[in-house]
Length: 289
Image 1 (cartoon, rainbow, N blue to C red):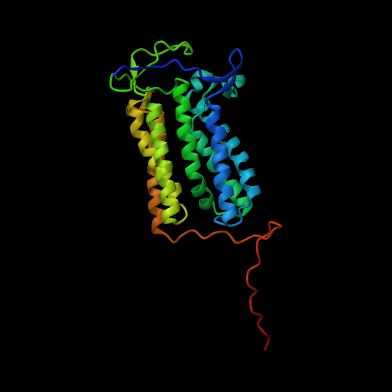
Image 2 (tube, rainbow, N blue to C red):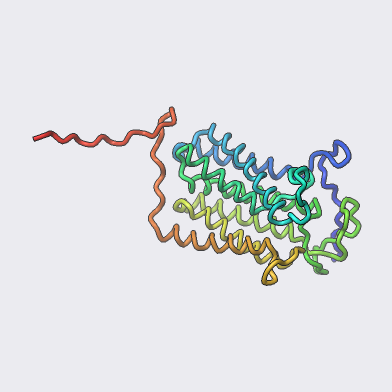
């Protein structure tokens, strides 16, 4: 089978030299849309206590900002600080690419914790609901990575290998045919989204099961796929992505066992339209004798 010759333009629409709308921006916009639709549906059906349709819109805006900041922070300061150094202008140049998944996930987790606390919403109710749209957005993001010719795999001459040597948009195209690891990860994320949706709608698991299942499965599968991705090793012949993915998989497994072995987490009390906690039942008065 002939190799796939990669020469895709990373810009969906060019507006100038090195500036325009990149393919990589679409997954973020679609991720926002998917998340908003999912949360709006949950609010209309009353499946998440205290969540309103307005909250759905506000959360999406906060979460995408937190994800971008976290993803950029990890990429610059954790993964490639030796490349960026002390150059603040380069730190914020997200239009040139460079976003780390683990940092984006951390940003979303912090946004969820803050938002849920201020709105009186169960954290697991929120994270369980956004697990499917996040997985879909990540699947589309890996397709965008493939178009951008980044995060490619190790040399491989098997079926569907990708040849970047003729790519006119890459500064230093790699030699030889490569594993399309971006597409492998995309298929993994689409599969996760499908399984999580099936479990959510058919079995209605207790709060936290979908969240930790997603985190654990994502971490372990990505850990294995990193063996065929071109990336430098840092410790024990593991890449930095593998270290974080392994920790992520381990945390997901431990927390899933913990959630399943404990009583389900109770939802916060209902709030009235003014945002105040609903009043509980009055205690019976005791007459003085």
